Length: 143
Image (cartoon, rainbow, N blue to C red; front, side, top):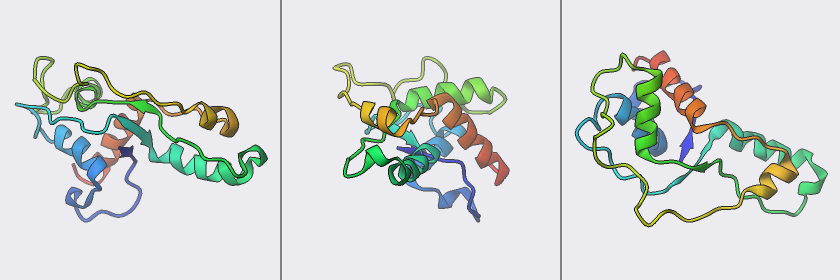
């Protein structure tokens, strides 16, 4: 999932990409009764992804290497919890007991983004900050 601040012009929040639709839907109360299953459990903030592209060009040690660009794991339940904490006035948010959207009981796959951090010098934004900024950008376009 790519989270991003909406900097391009939007006619409506119906124009969002799939990754941001899940955040919008939770924010707009569409997950009050049931949080949708997460599906893919890896995410990155698009600002970090863009920085990785730039660093891959600028950092000599990055030449001819591949980089796994992910900030880590996330779940839709975590997104709901962040929105609830940062925007408590929002109506229709799931409660702590709302079912769905969590990690599988068997756990999730691992990842190794150490080359991205070590070679490119990337310090990924937190999921908390990324979701907070994403919702803030929704509000700026009328959410």
